[in-house]
Image (cartoon, rainbow, N blue to C red; front, top):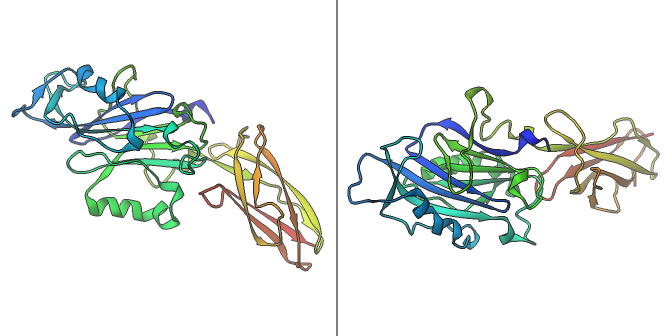
Length: 295
């Protein structure tokens, strides 16, 4: 991945919520605050005193918590303004070692409701096609919730350093040793449902291969960046889905150079037909396709 495709960013969507963020190699901690006009019984405390037990506490598989209710801090970006604590959660990559949710070609979302309660993170790209597109947004609208954080993970390396993290609300701020997120201007903002795939990748295959009926062919492939088509040197597992013809191996693993071979057979196909294979990731369909003319 390109270095510019990774990092911690915020958009400029105004909201009554502010999100504090702590980021390490394997742990992302979010703390939701709500702007308030006055304390009204809230206890004003220092940001460090409030967040230290949060960052040191167990992630508990991303279960949201709200054990600091009743406390408030001064807004780090607006001296004199007050932010009331609402909730927090931690997203720890090492919690799910061996599970199939943290995989290549992932996009994680962390919702927040109208009361400022964060919800457990969810990988939108391992659900159904309906969920991937419209249902998630419509369901959030029905529940009155929004997204507090996106984590775009083209390759699951086990490190948040290789992801692009977007905080949609303006005024997000770093806590602990985490610097404030970089602000994306209007011209560089990407929407929830479009353009994010520019940070992901696809599979490139030859377009001029031919095969004889019942014959075999080796199809070379390589990974390429969606943004500019440049080669992506990365190990990943691909799922091969025959639309016509036969493949002996339904899984292919690329080498460290991002390249691999597919062995396929034009089994039962006649001249003039096409051997067609769709290439998927573990949970995302159609990152590539190859059509081989039967002659």
